[in-house]
Image 1 (cartoon, rainbow, N blue to C red):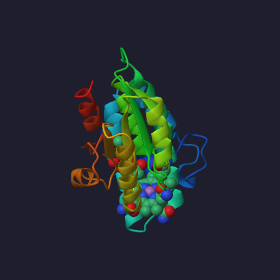
Image 2 (cartoon, helix red, strand yellow):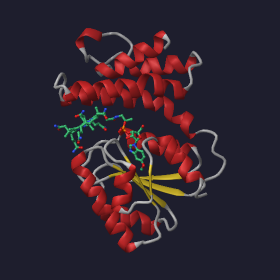
Image 3 (cartoon, helix red, strand yellow):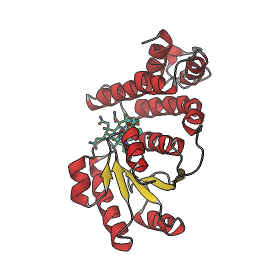
Image 4 (tube, rainbow, N blue to C red):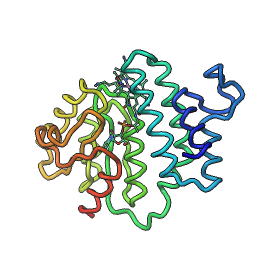
Length: 221
Ligand code: B1M
């Protein structure tokens, strides 16, 4: 890994958002994830490398430390903010190169779940592959998904869940949506979700990552 990606990964892991950010105190006045991402892109490192080699491994380390009670929610939140500041530079790359919209993809994180980094990533990748995105945000009720499906006939719906406790809300949302729109294609994902769970709750497709989502959607449009 290049020096710049290593530094970026450390910034995300420790929640250093940008040069002005006072947190963490040990990194005061140093460039943060915002500047380093910009520098990395300017030096020719691809958005994919930045994501795969710096950002995702950093968030994975954050998760492991949180599991071991070595860090707590505030630190995790700062790491998420640093990752989001990096993503502001990557987003235009994911959005470029689209000729025409292939369809509408409605996406949201299910009720009770506030995690949106992975969901945003999936949305960006799908948008970059030519789909119009209707992003309903986080903590999205089944009603909101229904309203969006009504407004966009023929759309595909994507549900994200990051907590084992909110997987049940994913199941309920799928059941409500399928009862109203049996032909609606529903895509599920998020760290605790599996292919088996997808089948069990009657969703149509599961992918552990954004690329799988993009590939699946290619088969539909
Ligand atoms: Co939370 N959190 N969190 N958290 N958090 C996890 C998920 C956790 C695994 C950490 C841990 O314990 N190791 C754990 C869940 C445990 C469990 O349920 N088994 C956890 C917990 C417990 C909690 C709280 C309950 C903590 C508390 O308050 N005590 C709380 C819950 C709040 C709520 O939602 N109601 C909470 C809060 C938070 C923050 C707000 C501080 C922050 C979220 C900020 C935000 O999203 N804006 C946060 C963060 C940052 C994390 C970790 C560290 C990172 C998540 C992340 O962004 N990963 C996470 C640990 C971890 O995952 N390593 C953790 C990077 C992202 C790119 O990956 O979201 O998995 P991910 O998305 C992937 C795939 O899953 C997939 O593609 C993405 C890219 O590869 N994917 C899809 C995701 N959605 C998809 C949809 C698809 C297809 C693929 O189709 C539709």
